[in-house]
Length: 361
Ligand SMILES: NC(=O)c1ccc[n+]([C@@H]2O[C@H](COP(=O)([O-])OP(=O)(O)OC[C@H]3O[C@@H](n4cnc5c(N)ncnc54)[C@H](O)[C@@H]3O)[C@@H](O)[C@H]2O)c1
Image (tube, rainbow, N blue to C red):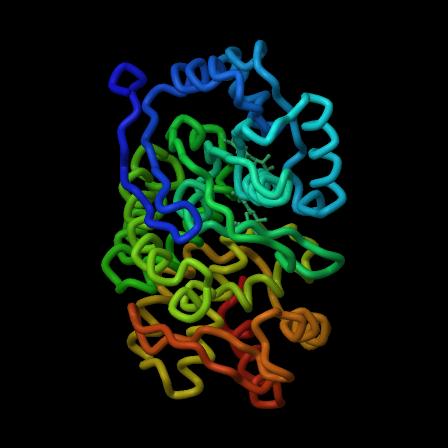
């Protein structure tokens, strides 16, 4: 492996396939040339990534590949079927490997297809966004949207190998970097305050100096790994990683996904913290120090009296709810998250509107 300039970062223990490996790949072209020599590999590539990295991906010209459009509205069973048809045209076989090259959308589609095609086919993943490098690449989940429901359908199906290459970060927009930072912050706050604080202090630097992100990517994956190895199937402990997500998903839904995922969950975490403060779970001091970090990553969005009903409508469709109660993760301070079921009554409405009146742009 040494001449491939690939080093093993770590291994994730899994109940599905014993374990899978996460590698750091220093040279993208060398990695792609090597993968394309294996005739069993079929590549499913985000079209934008194929354009940006055409030189490094040139080796794929002699391999079997498909380009896809990584759009949240394509994360559907219909689009998955379209990809399966293309794979069949490429003569896909049970013992082939699908190699996904793209962000979380490409990953979710390929992971889902790989778990149903021939009742299971191996896949590998080259994550190309900050979010997919620091978070989604490990953890086994695949998620497909259904009608207005985000991530309603899915399976647990980890790739057999993940290759992280930092060149991909150079072409991401600031908005995509902010999205990845939001996702990293939710791991950091679930762990304590130190790493989140460091992100806050170095926030402006991280938006431009993409090389500095590697340290935070590996810490984010390290925190996620400790929990998913215990609760891979998201039965209890892993629920803490829904922190910010319940409130964030509802923002994504009512804005037609115009706000990138990790930015929406930055608002989601800040709102969850505010609800925690108002419920007496979180001290003002802890709210303030987390808010100081999160405010740097909040996109312009408000819940107002006018859109409150559609926001609560989206919250009420969350798959983690019990009856009429909203299942969400609240905070007792950095490193101290807990699952709470809360009524969406008048008091809840006041807290939500109060939060958006006080703190949003
Ligand atoms: N399965 C999981 O565990 C998991 C976890 C978190 C999020 N997700 C899902 O991931 C999705 C969000 O994923 P995401 O933010 O990684 O990216 P994405 O796949 O949504 O891509 C975002 C945009 O960036 C473009 N892009 C990708 N790589 C690029 C690069 N290197 N340079 C320039 N542009 C590039 C894409 O074409 C797209 O326009 C959501 O659907 C979310 O639900 C899944």
